[in-house]
Structure formats: C-alpha cells, structure tokens
Image (cartoon, rainbow, N blue to C red; front, side, top):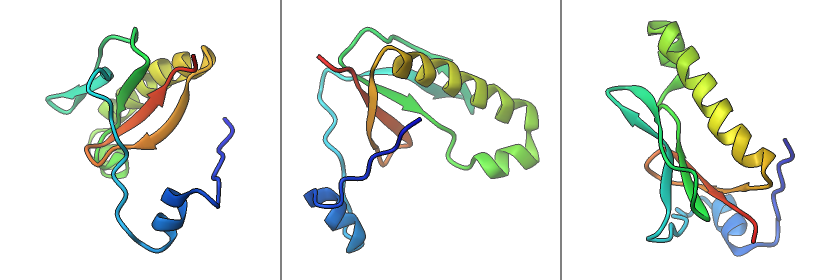
Length: 105
C-alpha cells in the first residue's frame, strides 16, 4: 500500500493545525463493509464512493475477543483489498469509523 500525504493541501494544513476536518461523503455513497452487533457485515461494492467500516478500538477488541478481531481483520482485508486491487483509493476517514474509498473514473 502506498500512502500519499500532500502537504500543501488545505485539509492537510488544517489537520496539522489541529483543526477538525470532516470529509464530504456524497449522498450516493454505499457501505461496502458495515458493523452490526460488533461484527463486520459485507455490503455492496458497486458505487463510485464506498464506506468501509473498522471497529472503534481494534486493540481492545484483540484483548477481549481475539476471534472477532480476526474476523474484522479478514473482512477489512477482503473488502478494502479487493477495492484497492481494482484501482480504488482511500481518500479519507469519516468521523463515524469508515474509510472513504473512491473508484477512479
């Protein structure tokens, strides 16, 4: 995985200043991986913008429920990995615990 942090972008400068930055999520975004009762649930992946959930505290989950932590790791790997393998890219992280993933046009 390649991470790019464009230091001159306004949202990066705001983050460095400690200013909150809520990425815009288009209304037609779909949830490719959701959380239900603490466990991952796969969803649709046929949209331009997708949301991929992650657990709120994976470290605590690893200590208290290693099996569920492993299930999350595999689910995120499978969904996010497949999307990135298709050329999609992570463009942000929502305040609700989702990677924001954009397909390239």
